[in-house]
Length: 149
Length: 135
Figure 1 (tube, each protein chain N blue to C red):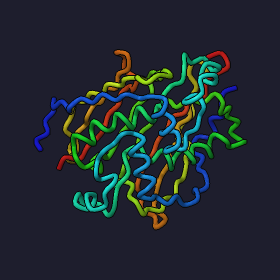
Figure 2: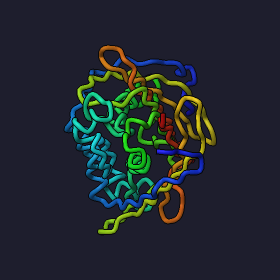
Figure 3: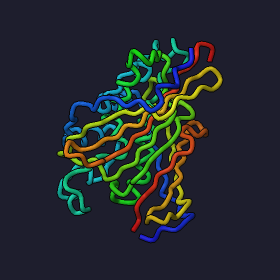
Figure 4: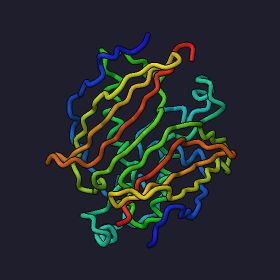
């Protein structure tokens, strides 16, 4: 059954704050094989003009995945999450995510479309500091594969 | 650094093994079993365990980060997940080959870099691009 398009425009409750640590950034950088000193060495990051070590461009998924799940598990949306695949992903960094940030994210459903038996849900997650500074806008398009697709 | 439309970035080849997938699962907290359990992967119709699309996307971002020096200069990064990277249970894993080229100068002091990530000769990320601050 297609998803209800009246959910377009729905916003969700802000997440609990996520504390960005140097250790988590280094662990993530190791996992993707990224060697930049800006991910590992606070002095090197400061020399580039950052307050502390910064996170790789896709690190924001660690934060926004949680809010995507809030949408996927919204009982009213009736989305079969066992059929969800990640269709596309975009990050706009208003500034890099930096160690020491406390990040709060808010999910918004920007679009719901259906094509060839599949539903496509675009979730925009606005990631800000607890002080209210917008840091990253993460957009995920989730494809809910139809029964016959 | 002089950056012009047409500049090709130094290419990057990355081998992804099952161990890399497990490590990425832990670091990203994405524990979907299709990225580590053959049975689950085959049950949902995949040929074998596949890499997280987000891991391929992350690995491909390295070509830009290593070229520009300050990864904080990457102000936008996006792609579609076109094809899966199938990772066999052996020491060689899957080879992902990343190339990239500056394609556009934008008015806000950024350039657009188009990125291609290929596995077995076929593009796995579609329309991958980064917008990078150069001035």
